[in-house]
Image (tube, rainbow, N blue to C red; front, side, top):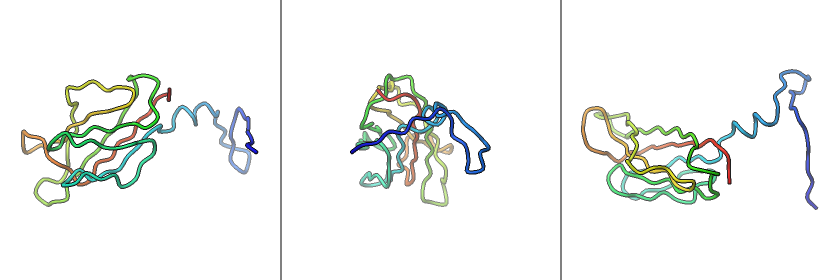
Length: 130
């Protein structure tokens, strides 16, 4: 038997620090992923990400399992390499517009002009689910 809890405001155990549930639901990531983008691309952990597509060197598509309501969501992506020469990555738009079910990204490093594979790539997506 399923149960339902309906509240307007959440407070800590002492009854302080209240926050409206709309902020909790609206401000929570609707999808996030941590993946290895080197060699065989592999998801380490995720929420609401069905897969990662390897489109080529440093070029990845994050496929969202339960679609967003539209393509106007907010995303944050970070990347780093596992070497001592070129440690941090930059994330750039791929020239492909986001869709409600996919976000394409390209990673580069400041010292080169081409895309590079990244050992640690993390993304979070905020917005409304469909």
